[in-house]
Amino acid sequence: MRESSDLQKTGICMIWIYEILFWMGLALAAPFYLLRMRRRGGYARDFMERFGVFSREKAGRLRDLKPVWLHAVSVGEVDLALQLIEQLRSRPDCPPLALSTTTSTGHAMAAKKLPPNVPLFYYPLDSRFCFGRVHRLLQPRAFVLVEAELWPGHLRFCAQRGVPMALINARLSNRCLPRYRRFRWFLEPGFAGFKLVTLQCQADRERLGGLGFPGSALQVAGCLKYDTAHGVDAARRERLLNDFGFFEKRPVWLAGSTHPGEEELAVDIYHRLREKRPSLVLALAPRHAERAGQILTMTRERGLRMARRSKLSEAGGEMDGMVLDTTGELKYLYERADVIFMGKSLLGQGGQNIIEPAVLGKPIVFGPHMENFPVVTADFLEAGAAIQVSDAAGLERETARLLDDPAARQRLGENARAVVQAKRGAMERTIHGLRSLLG
Image 1 (cartoon, one colour):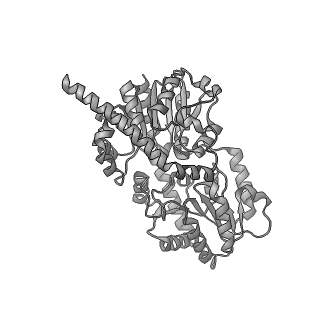
Image 2: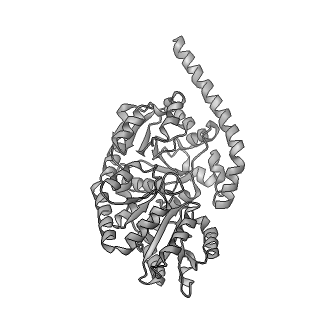
C-alpha cells in the first residue's frame, strides 16, 4: 500500500512539473508561433479554442455530447479522419462524433467537408487547464488519434479517467524512436491507456510494443492511405482541368508539396530541361499555399512567365507554367502531369504522400528524405513503382529520361497503380477494430 501511495505521489509530482515546463516552453516559443500564424493567416479565428474556451453557440453544440472524439493534425490526417467518419456514420449504431484539428489548413478542409452534425474545433494545448475544460464540456466516450500527435499530458489524463483511446494508422520512424525511448519513463502511463493501435507494418508493432503500448492493443492493419486515395469533387476537378487547358497538350512537369528551397531548384532544373523541350510546362505546388506569392515573385525574377492557379483563367499570352495557390486541388493537377517530383524529400525532411498520384498511374520521382513514409516508400521501390534520387542532379537526370521515354513513364505508372490496388484493405480492418473498441 505504501509503495502504491509513493508511486501515486510521484506521478502527481511529475504531472505538475510537466505543467510548469510546458507553460515555460510555450512562453519562450510564443513569438515564433505568433509570427508563423500571422504569415499563414487563418489562425486568429477560434484561437481561444486552443485554450478550451468556446463561443456560446459552439459550447452549446458540444455540451454533454458524449461523442467519439477524433483528432487529426493537418490536411493529410484530416482526409483520413473524414473517411473514417463516413464509414462509421454508415452504420445504424454510430455514436455521436466530433473532430478536432491542429492546423488552420486542416481545420478549413474539415469545415468544408464535415457533415453538419459532426462538430469541429481546435485541439487544446497540452495542459490540464485547457484539455480539462474540453473533457468537462464534451464528456467523450472515446478518444481516437489519426496517425500521431502524442501529447503526454492529455494521454495520461485520458488513461487516468478511463477514456478508451485508439491510435489509427500509427507509424514510428527509426529517427524518432530514440527520443521516445529516452522519455519512456514519463510517456508510458499515457501509452498504457491505449485499447487499440492499428499499425502499418510488423516493425511498427515491435517499436511501439517496446515503448509501453499494451501488446493486446497492437494490430497490424496496413497503411490506411492506400484505401483513402480516392474521392473526387467532380466540379472542382473539371474546373481545374478546364482552366489548365490553357496549356493545351504541352508536357507538364509537376513539383508537388514542395518546401522552401525546392522551388528554386525546380526552376533551375526547368530552365535546363526546356533547352531541349521548349514546350515543357512547369507546375509548382507548394505544401503551404500561402507561400504562392513569394514563389511567383521568385519565378518572375528568374525569367519565367508564371500564373497563379486562382488567376489561370485570366492568363494571356505564352506562359511557362503556374503556381498552385489553392488548397484541395493538387490531386486533380496530378492528373494532368507527365512526370511528378514529390517535395519535402530533397531538401526537406520526411517526404510527402505519393499514393494519390500513384492511383492515377503517374511516374513519381522523390529525393532521399522519405522518413515519414517508410512502409509506402519500401513498397513502391521494391515493385519498381517509383524512382528515388539522392540529389538535384539525379532529379534532373531522371526527369529528363522520363520526359523523353513515354514507355518508361507508362511502366512506372502502371506499377504504381498496381501497388495501390494490391495494398488495399486497411480501412475495413480499422473499422472492425474501432467497432470492437466502441462495443
